[in-house]
Image 1: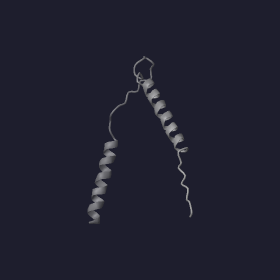
Image 2 (image 1 turned 30 degrees about the vertical axis):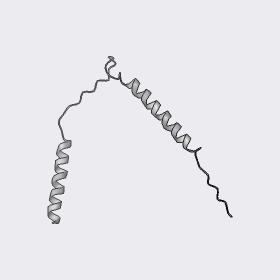
Image 3 (image 1 turned 180 degrees about the horizontal axis):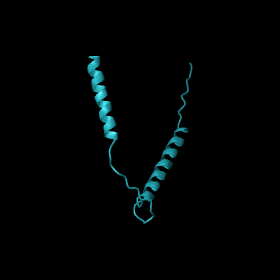
Image 4 (image 1 turned 45 degrees about the vertical axis):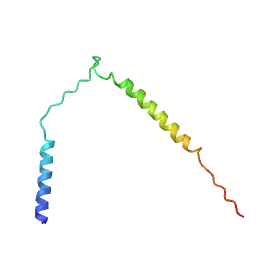
Amino acid sequence: MKQTSLLLLAALVNVAAIAQNGGGSVDVNLGTDGGGGGGATWMWIVGAVVLVLLIVLLMGRGGTTHRTTVIKK
């Protein structure tokens, strides 16, 4: 049983190593030709709104503590 699981583990590691050895090429263009990045503005706005709402919600929880009074007879 140990030999079978060791064999399966070795085969899995071998497949993972072969998969990482892909021969694809990556072309990265860092030029400023005006293409792309058009959606970045609305993402910043939405992120800022979510951050402000999160801060407001977390700050508001501190003031809503309820105190109970125990009256002894």
